[in-house]
Image 1: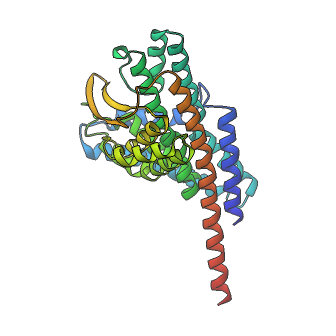
Image 2: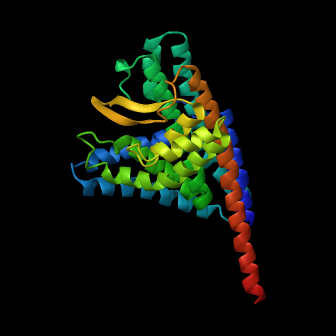
Image 3: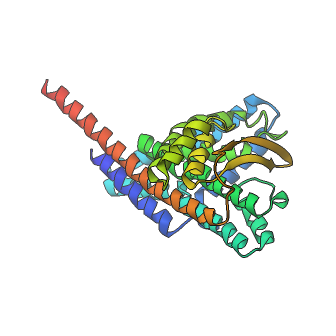
Length: 322
């Protein structure tokens, strides 16, 4: 039980660290992983699923194995174990940086400076910003805040509660690989297949928890739940759909529709079709909702870990008495 309490303390400290000191501009561990994965890609790339699978297993599996060895090295040192958890949670969470970038785009839009907004938008998502007007950029930001609340906060906390430091690291590695090679461009359609499928699997529990907590934290719980149920499966991504739909219902806006990625135009289903078009003010509302969801996710996952530890301890004591 002491180990689970140490994780809870470390997770809370790491979450607080992200609130106080967001991702640094340089020297971030996730950026270092990205550079290493890109170097491996240059060696392994072939237009073939098998090579892409090897790339995913080598990068994500190797990183998770290293984290497991590090966690094992400090397993008998409670203070070091808690410090390692705190540092890892801080490294893998990106909620504060997400809010910072969203607000930067929102501030530029509010000032009427579309050029600056277009310059900052790629920090959040892979849309082609030059073709977007103000409302379209506002919609892109709200959608990105919703999806990344799951990817950059809740999903990591779920896997941390389930697997400790190795779970945190493995989730962030898989999610980063998906962002790098998991899209359907000509170069990555086959090579990135394994990373995309693994990310779908890893993101499933976090996305559903994100949608549920969005309903709980929503100013319009009925609207969030209704949109999730009606439109969550309409999105081409099995994990982005529930999250974006619940955010759309919570904020009373309409998401989805036509968008452009890397020169490709996609016509996605509309989420919460009865909502209004997103406005600049909805960016701040989305960021605040994301923050509430993150706090609830920390509380939920830590409570779940502590409850599982208590149940395991009780079962163990019962077996000893018998």
